[in-house]
Length: 411
Image 1 (cartoon, rainbow, N blue to C red):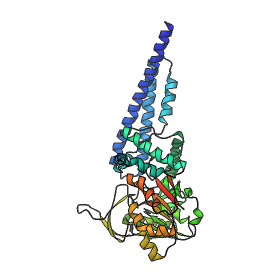
Image 2 (cartoon, rainbow, N blue to C red):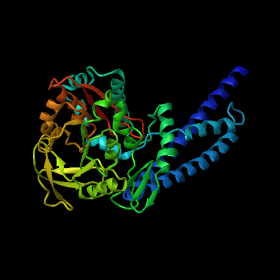
Image 3 (cartoon, rainbow, N blue to C red):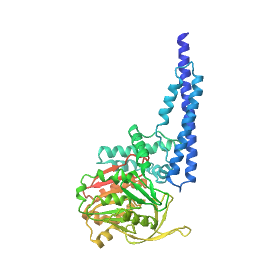
Image 4 (tube, rainbow, N blue to C red):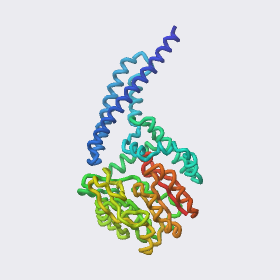
């Protein structure tokens, strides 16, 4: 009889613990859904609003979970769990960092990965991608694909994706890097020793990819080979990447940015940082010279380049476009490194840079996250030239699981 009673108490404790876990997860998911709605309404507002929003949510979660713990501790007075144990469990879970990035989830969906994985040649493409990569790069590829699968299985929930190490790094970024980038003047942000000019006052664009990970520069095996050569920064945005690249060479950095708003901020960033070896170029990059039409999206870090303007579109700007081969030949450059983040036009870049890459063989920092085709095929594109490049795939630790994935190519 005592054994049966003990088993019933144990079962009741487990059931109650599951009930708390279920109620807690429903609570947190409901709060984050409300937060996402607020985020959409204030997508053009300051990052400070989003930070304050998260603080409010976390405070609400804490207060309600204490209430739940108190309530269920009374009900469980004859069970094996007590109020303190419940609180410890809730507190540990509350401090856990869940993945919740609706923007990136949408970005991945639009990148066409689901359709790409259904292609009959997908296995061949995957094997081509991981062939001859180092172990860390292979693990990076597999981690990205695994997490994308989990997101498809849990599209509307906070997802438990990050390892303990990743959670520690992300927590440090929140409390350190992102918490210490003040707006010291309207439209001017301090990021460590650098000053950044924003296209719009109140909106900061600091990124760990640039100022902590250093655009992948530290992953290069032979940075000394770049020191006496020029660098091309394709997709320079507001000059953040150009500041980092300027320190990697004693020669010049040519910073290309097609958006007029971003280009003006780029020039201001270079001016206030007294950066003398960066040349700002107001132009886009393509397979050949000509004119293109651009339209900035909401986060202003991404531009859509249109070869044919949409007659119904507003705020479309015509900008000159040139190829890397044309620019290098016209300015007689000796190129040691090319960094490329041009919003899905990386294939066009390769078409217009083939001669430079074949003859000068610069190191490449090539973004491969804009589409599934880029992710799986840009490496193969360069490999087919048989130039002796070695490849790495790098994704820094931050709150994203796919954005800013980088293909590093080096002789």
